[in-house]
Length: 424
Ligand SMILES: Cc1cc2nc3c(=O)[nH]c(=O)nc-3n(C[C@H](O)[C@H](O)[C@H](O)COP(=O)(O)OP(=O)(O)OC[C@H]3O[C@@H](n4cnc5c(N)ncnc54)[C@H](O)[C@@H]3O)c2cc1C
Image (cartoon, rainbow, N blue to C red; front, side, top):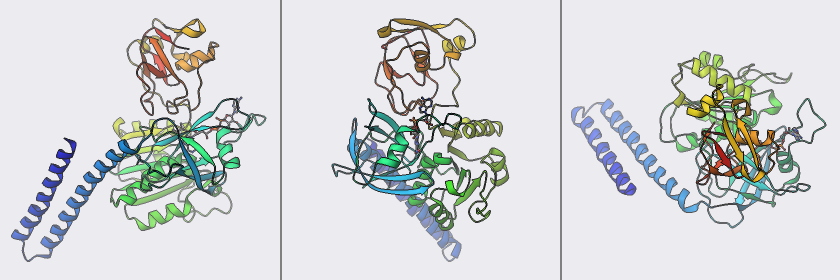
């Protein structure tokens, strides 16, 4: 049926191409304008036909080539991109073709790290366009101990990748997933914003737009502290130089002595909605962003205050979600001091009341000594915390990266919608 609809759309567009072109020629046979407009309408409609055909191929390949659970990938190449930031190219160990993905999606890794009793599960965004069927690329920044607690061990997975994994090593990877991705069929002008290593999903979007040949107006804002953190510098500068529709705005919040304004970066300030107001023609864009929580919070608030409709504001957090949706119904009542809801952790034989301060079901469990729920990304993406619901209903503070199985929930982003019995 879908194929039929596509064929009809393609036929219709094809007929329209000829018709529009001929009309222009009939009425203005000798004018240069007619020839130009004929050519433009033909080019435009041909591009539309290519887009529809391409979307259909991508959907088919996603279904045919995807996999369940974890698949083995070999690190085929490793490239330093900035201080402590490294790209890893991952080729499927079985040599079979890879499914395409949507620009902005991520991979989930199951890592056996020496000294850890359990596998460590972490998500990393795909940092290149989907047009490389032989390998995927992720770009990872090593995470140090928190500034106020230097005695703690540094980030497990990021430092394992940077310090211990090398070309030829094998890692276990889930198929691409995530709901934060660019709608490639739209022509609406876009603003892509990356803060620090949050650049990765929006870089995938930028590369996808440019490689598709689309002329979609694209503003790319990238915020880092200084030149040492500036990843993909040459690639970004070349992309902006070679594509009239791409406008690059690099912001250094604390430029170093050697960093040159106008050369290395454009703005000596943080990425902010005030900057958008100075640089963009209007607020009429679709916004996609990823970065540290303070940046995300200020952008969401600022864009809403600038009357950007919610449907044009898309973002992803790399850690626990800092921007949360408003609750509905009973959860909202309980959150605002109404009757509390009860959560029963059945296997731990513990019943506790829930209110807004308790946070997610995972946080409620942890605060009450329920220790049998694992957790990793705490953003509803990696799936470590998925737990069966024995009775009752939940709602999500943010949409999960992919749906949990029927009768289960991502406890890290779920709150009770009714009294609840959880299998934990
Ligand atoms: C959808 C998604 C996409 C992502 N994409 C990317 C990406 O493209 N690139 C990227 O670099 N990251 C990305 N991330 C983040 C990534 O998944 C990891 O969260 C990140 O690499 C940190 O993991 P880690 O294992 O290195 O650190 P962890 O081991 O999780 O440690 C995190 C911090 O906690 C500290 N810590 C250690 N022990 C304690 C303790 N006892 N008490 C308190 N603190 C402690 C550590 O020192 C460190 O500062 C993404 C995350 C998500 C959810």
